[in-house]
Image (cartoon, rainbow, N blue to C red; front, side, top):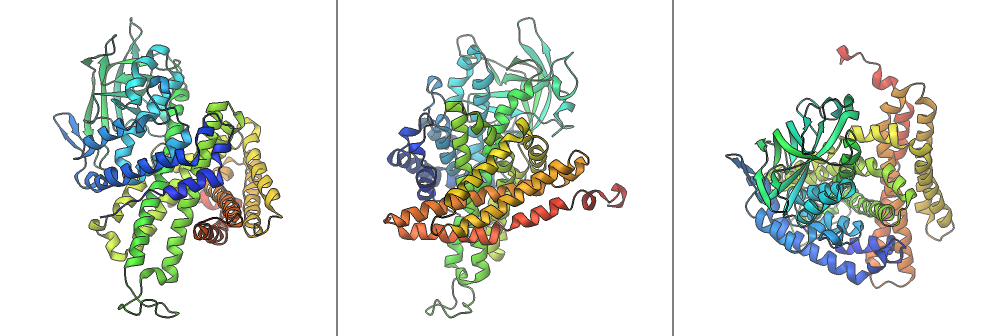
Length: 591
């Protein structure tokens, strides 16, 4: 059975040595000293390793069951969910006035990686609730906040997001679910939604569905979509639960992975709903939840890569196969361990450099969200908006790739279910699809985010990289990290200029290169993170750290990324500059 150990040492390193959060002027960050964050991370790590991780294979093999309209989660999930609630983990970064702990988003992100790595399917129940609660917090009335948020922050009630219908996925303007206004100000919601994660289960006394629907007479297409709160059980004026609403689970889907999470077909048969935000502005409100969810899904890509890497590394050190071509390393055994072989090393280094780079990238993104929300930093808000599709798309693409590479370390055993490696690949696969398929993320990045606010946010990113390179160009030992980053950033700028030059006269030229651009951008972001980590570790070594091996290892891994991974930016640029013709030349009938 696979095991999981929370990477708390690396998490602390990123938070304090690289990001130096305690010195930040973001409100709430001055409290985040090493001892404080260590206490939180250690406790979260224990829960992840001792409670959630053992349930991961249970969720995978047993899955959710539906009987007479009731969905039952896998054995052990209810008890684990109760433990999470008692510890206050679901509301760690939610406002204190609604029962949360009020910590910065960066701490929710840090512990979220642990929980997701240990048990992605389980963690989705509270993760979706967090997103739904955040949407009500941002767009709800005072009464709606008072009614729903305390229960949702505590996870006594959970939450969902309902977008997709059988005939419309990405193109939500085609939706048919309707909401008929009622005399009392409520609405009757009728329609069917599919692929609703955590849509029905037995771990909470109520489920608060956020449902996109159209009010009759509204604008056509996506401009006519509104967002509604539709509780599974209606709430009385005094806050107690009342009658069952006209919403039900039609079935749970049989899926490739995340078997422990109930993915439901939800039927709304004149269910009572309440408008959340403005009429016909539903997508604006839902994007509060979707953008948070996209960052969380990017975290899932990292998390599955991390746990897969941990187990692949242990196997590579233990499994004896073949002899080192440079000389026997295990003379007392019949063979040397797998880890002596260069191709195994290459595989493991790709996993390690991705996971650690992605962790730094994700936590940096979380600090930008805190800067935007806690001190009204518009530049930070614009920058994280630009990078959201990169975090979601690049980290989930590469995260899935890393789980497959981890599986490869096991050879044939990786394909056998008892070793557990296939679950990581199967669970990671969905992250590339939901919350906006990665192709759509790439289109959003190139079609909307690059030009947003006159392109000032992407220019701010280029300036940030340029500033880092300039500040560290003369620093001893940093040249081997700064120069590759400069070249990669130049590739990214060249690609952006190509889109600007070609996009207006031939939109397909930009769209055909959008996926490569997303990956090019992702590599530059991880290259920046590795350069920052190299600087932090060099400083620690110069200061006489008591753990030189840790920091020397960081420098070796940084060199690997700079020399073996970051050069992929040139490949992506070449593909982009090839234009639309190679992609679009073939007639549809000739495929």
